[in-house]
Image 1 (cartoon, rainbow, N blue to C red):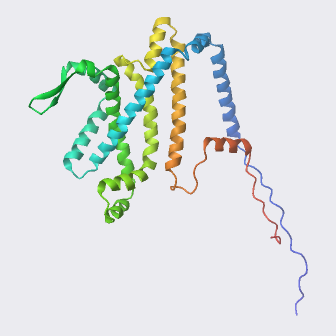
Image 2: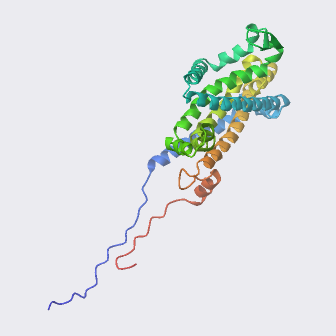
Image 3: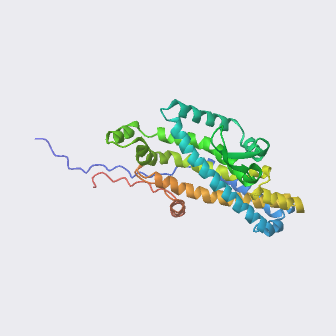
Length: 316
């Protein structure tokens, strides 16, 4: 018989986890902090910025009215763009060659011409048509409108921005519809659902996850594109600022006022876009992304990741 080894097994030394050093992060952080300090110093010491004028006109009545007009123009133009984009996308995907060709021509034309040119065209539409009539084609007219009173600067801005946006939104909606598996449509049609109901109840709700992010970007872009309406004499936010600094020659402070208002509204729209994406993203991933407040709370309370404890041999 062999002797039984009664000696205790040798235990390995405990692993000491050493965090990985990132000197590049510290160097880049120092550079960013220095540049930020230089920017703050310039903002508070440069007399040409004229912060007193900024504070005087930030809540000026003309600026606030221009801001309201900008928001109205953004909402109406985006509503026209979204509704028109859905219609054009369905026409592009239609089996009818006339509908698909007409939608393709519309998109080709409005995406091929600058939006500024379209704004100027609608503002000068009175030079092309003196009156607009409603009646039987090539027959008697029942109602006639004067173009000068019908197409105001506000209407011209809405037509120019909304019709142009519809061409871009149609491609966004079409991409969202094509992202849904065709088996969903086939299964719904096998249950006896009509094509329009399938699109409304099955396809579009699933396509929203793809449609919402670029639509939010288009809305933010539309907010800033409304500044082009100042070229057709429509008083929006930028035009309101221009009217003031053309009178007092305080160009830089008034441009800062306009820019800050754009940044504020854009930030609000960005937050709304984030929560919409989070809402329609349910079901696409097992865990929803954290909200900005949750992310901030995590960054403030978590400083480093604790390495996992390695149990010693012989212990459970």
